[in-house]
Amino acid sequence: EGYEVLGENIQNVVVGKVLSIEKHQDSDHLNICMLDVGKDAPIQIVTGAQNVVKDAVVPVALDGAVLPDGKKIKAGKLRGVESNGMLCSLSELGLSLNDFPYAIEDGIFLLEEECNIGDDIRDVCLLNDVVVDFELTFNRPDCLAFIGIARETAATLGEKLEYTEPIIPETDGELDPSLLKVSVEDSTLCPRYSAAMVKNVKIASSPKWLRARLRAAGVRPINNIVDITNYVMLEYG
Image 1 (cartoon, helix red, strand yellow):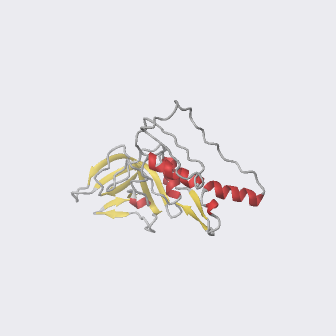
Image 2 (cartoon, helix red, strand yellow; image 1 turned 45 degrees about the vertical axis):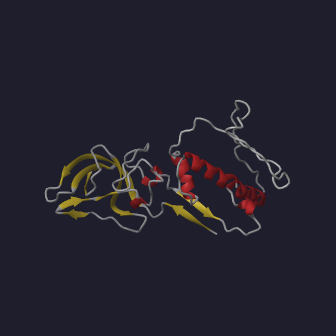
Image 3 (cartoon, one colour; image 1 turned 60 degrees about the vertical axis):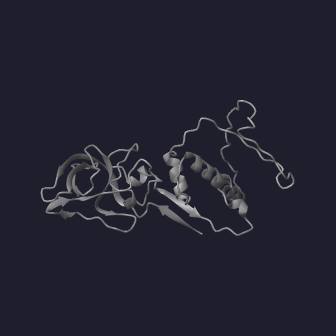
């Protein structure tokens, strides 16, 4: 049906490091920050954000930057002090706490990702990707999953279907029926139903790559258990 280039509306936003912070002399809430953005010399930006600290790594919209909502950033002056860009929050990048749970909702996005000063923020946040949208008819529910689309594509193009076989770890014996029990009430409608138990699981955030893939597929990341369930559903149908 079409395709969407993720992050294409974000331009000239890079990773920067806060070198110094000082109070604006003519304002009780503005701060003047000097930032290393990977250029020959540091740049100065005035911000009203209160969560920015020295040595913080932050997204910096440089002069001429464009944000997802179409907002254009230009150099100017705030209360008479030169400001050559803007420090970005999650929402200003089109992201939310579901994408980066360690961040805060009201404030500048303090990056904890592995990245280098001057990196394109789209690469750091895994926004440099393309999402293909398929229009499916009602008689093709087998294509409502990634493997289904891959199988159809391979058959159409005469290519070999290749995908990774899931690795099933060794079990420690039979399941305790008091913890998990499966019974099939109608073997005609459901000839087989299998179950397995994973113990000692800690509820936490999913890895960034998994959160990014779910976001690209239109699914909101929640936590590792919910996310892997949704991921496998999207993969296998």
